[in-house]
Image 1 (cartoon, rainbow, N blue to C red):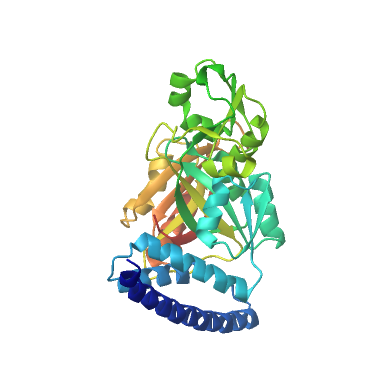
Image 2 (image 1 turned 135 degrees about the vertical axis):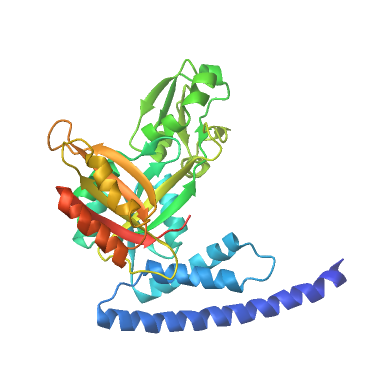
Length: 357
């Protein structure tokens, strides 16, 4: 067997040597671009360019390597390049090992600096102050719907949505107990509890559900408490030394959370499809919402989402968060927004960004 493997291993070693040389050449070019960006005051991380690179390398992929794996490899290459260009700080809703932390790593790679923060408001404030370059926040889950704290912050902040990310969420039950019937309390974030509600009712009807600041914090709380369990990721269990008793306890197998990346500078149009997010308020009159939708339908702009949220300004006053396909700078989008401003008390552009899944 050794003689059969040797030529293949030698070929791999030779290819690895070439790859390392090519990676370093690529990083040298990226560093040169970084110096130009610094002189021009341009952002180091450019979501539209990132998507263009992903699209091109996938087009070149004619082999057996899945595109998802190729994107993951290039994510780390670009992460290293960004780190060379500038010390980049990513703020996220912490603590470490939460799903938001995992989303941040998936989006930006392991080479950047990460700062875990206790609240969504803290993420916004750190980016606004310039102490962080970008922030990563959850915005909606396919099972539980919108994350309202994130919506509220988008209304009040001048930051723009620059990118989005979807992450498959798999919850585990972590505990030092081995008998489900002996678990008296289950700790987790409210969204995680909601995503596992049917499983909990079926398997742990006796347990009291306790809301915590994060899934990772829940794991910390149940350590050395065999009558308690936490709902969190297996990564959080590994980090805090709490065993997994049950895996994949979410009620729906396709449990996905959408995350947003916020920053100070908006994203330019791309060669691929863009999505735009806005928030509006409407007058208290018959047909007001229908009038607000008309500027989109008349221009064949596809609405992806409409989410209502109390404005907290006065009773029964609502904001409407709208996602649609198109970029803020496109003529038909500008026309639609102008029409909206004529009939809506508030129209705020939250950001335009690559429409990736």
